[in-house]
Length: 122
Image 1 (cartoon, rainbow, N blue to C red):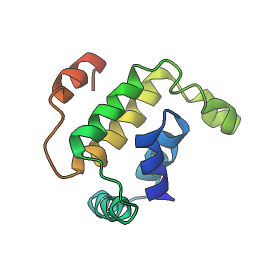
Image 2: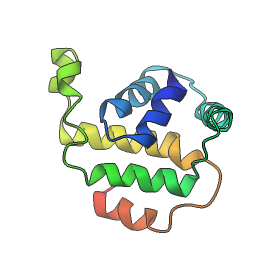
Image 3: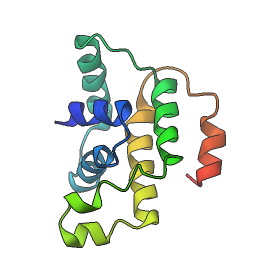
Image 4: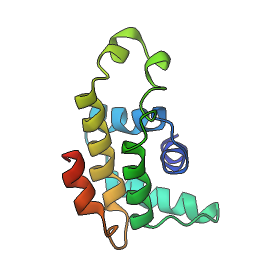
């Protein structure tokens, strides 16, 4: 599920694709994010899909400027979790997935990544 969710996160603009990786990273102690990234890269390779670190970072930051990116999650969650989806919580989820997974991909950083981190306060 992890690998499918990460691929979906990078290929479409659905906030729900961010929820599962963030939830697992916070909930599962001792999760080896480096191993997840390694498996993800193998998964992409088997599917004959190439996504560089820079491209993944760019795609992630494009989601933050999309006003509808986070709107699809609320109706899919239990009420208590949906109420916890504040702007701050969503930014924290984005940051967690970005730092623990996307930024760990091999290769060069996207040229505008630093600028975008400042812009969004990450």
